[in-house]
Length: 473
Image 1 (cartoon, rainbow, N blue to C red):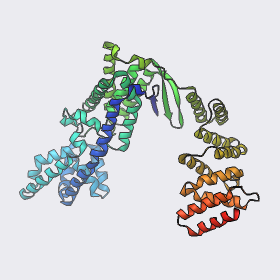
Image 2 (image 1 turned 180 degrees about the horizontal axis):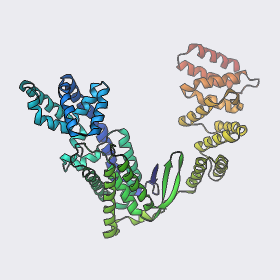
Image 3 (image 1 turned 90 degrees about the vertical axis):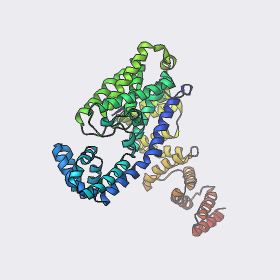
Image 4 (image 1 turned 180 degrees about the vertical axis):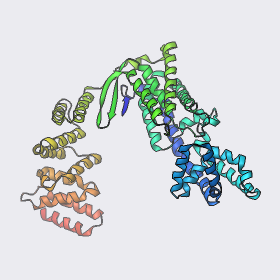
């Protein structure tokens, strides 16, 4: 389930400069810096396996985890070892920082002196490679906290979807918070909420060597600031719950128990997940405290004109929302009537026409074909619009493809403009050519087909349609 505030729209008079900077830095760090992570790790893993250090350490690692009596860790490692792929088990051992420390203390007694010297040289080399990986070098590690890592961890991400998810929610809430607070204060508060989220997560396990990365804590803080700014003011929310999509209005703080409750339940029910739920809670609480202090001590620094500005949905948006809500409830008859009312009141864009056609196709098939004719004979479609028309045409049965001559001609002409749709043009042309009453401009269409096939180096079809064009002329 997703619930996000949509009360405010982008306002270029209050341009979100700090927000743009934050997003750009996150994207650049991920695509320009973190792309090298796999190379460092792969090289360390290659040395570990190829130099047979993995085989030498394997029995000692089994002893190490059994001494630790961590049943889940033992089960996970045994599962990887059963895959009969050295890479998985070797990577698991290589990333175990506690085992590396253990081996540094005991390797001299576990290996013969000659091999020990070789082992310590290679292990240090692999460890250096591992620490060149971004999340090791700049992530927030509980048992090795650095002041700088409280900031740097916020700009690292574990994958594309991790980055996109965080940036989506940051943008949705961030521009309104920045417009209310100002650029400088927003940037400082954003970083502080990230620090708060990071500290909350590491305090859960101060002995952990697992790096924390991601902007989730700071993003949660921005969400808290959004709710703190608008508090009991009724604002618009967008929701998406399975197939149900729509909007509702409620006091901003209405979302607070849902958010905190979801994070705490997730923390309780998913203890082994990689998601840092406590960082979310810590960032949220930090953001709430910061905005609370501003509201309490310096409310005049907030942009009240922007906060109180009415940006409720326009009548067009409300009408469209009504249509989609009816469709969510499978009230297709009512949705079709609302579409007609909307078109009468506000006119119809291309997407609304396609929606009406689909509703007619389901409810009144006899009217759908006539309406499809209207869509085709309307203004010339753009390429994205033509792709939607082509999809409808392709899914129609042959019996449903009998459209009016003018619509037939225009559809064939539109399909010619896109090489992958040329077969549709040919089929439509053949139907019109075989008809008793041929379209008055069919010779022009034949000439156009000849020119297209010439570009495709199809000599036979080029000559065929040139002859037909001359015949029709």
